[in-house]
Image (cartoon, rainbow, N blue to C red; front, side, top):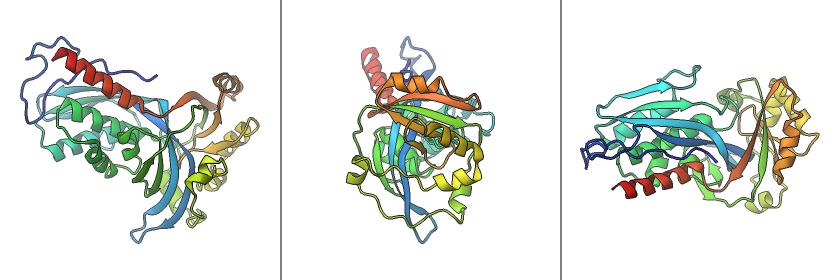
Length: 316
C-alpha cells in the first residue's frame, strides 16, 4: 500500500499558536502523504455548457499506487517547493497552488515546504497533478489545523482542477457535469496493468479537437455495472494523433479489453488476478513504461489521514 503518515502536525492554525516542538512532542519534522493515481473506467462527453465547459460522464477508479508528498510546516507564511517535477515550474505546480489557495482561504499564518516525488507520468491521464493538489489540501488542512470539512476542501479543489474533488473525497465515484457531481461507487477488487507510451498528451488540445464526439448518448450506472460501457470519447482522437498510444492499445488488446485513461496517453487492462497482470507485464515492449497497481475503494490518503489522527491522539 502507499506510504503512511510518519509524523503529526508541526503547527496550528489560527486557534493555537504553539508548534509541536514547543509542546515537547518527539516527532519528525516532515510528514509523508500518498497522492494516488486514478483511472477512468469509461468516459463520455454528453454535451457542452454555454460557457464552453464539456459535460462528462465517467467512473473514477482510485489506485494504491501514485505520487508521494512530503510536507513540513513553516512558522512564517512562505510556501516553498523543495522538490517536484522538473518540467513544471513551482508557480505552475498544482501542489504549490493548492497550498497557497488554502492559505488564502483560511487566513492561516503558517507556511509549508513541499517535496513531491513524482511517479505518475505527466500527461498520462492518471490524475497526477490533481491528486497532488488534493493531498496538499487534505494534509495541510490537518497540519495547519485550519479545520475545513472535506466538502469545503473539494470546493476549493474544483477551482484548481475538475479531478481534484474525487481525490479529496477519497472514494471511487460515478461523475457527471464537469466532473463535480460525484456519486460514491463501490467497485470489485481488481488489478490493473498500466502501459504508458513516452509521449505527453495535452488535455486542452484534445478538448479542442474538431473530431471529438461531444454529443454521445448518456450512459447509465446500470449499463456500466453490467460491463457494457467501456468506451472513452478521447480514444479515437488520441489514437489518430499519437501513434505510440495506438501501438500500446494494439499490443495490450491481445490480452483483453484495453482502454485509454482520461484524456491522457496511458492505457490499461483490468484483471481479477495479480499473477496474470504481472505475467503480461513481463512481456511489455521496452518502448513503454509498465506499471502494476491494485484498485482500491478507500484512498491511501484517507488511510494515511486516519493513522495521523491516531498518532496525534496518542501524543496529546
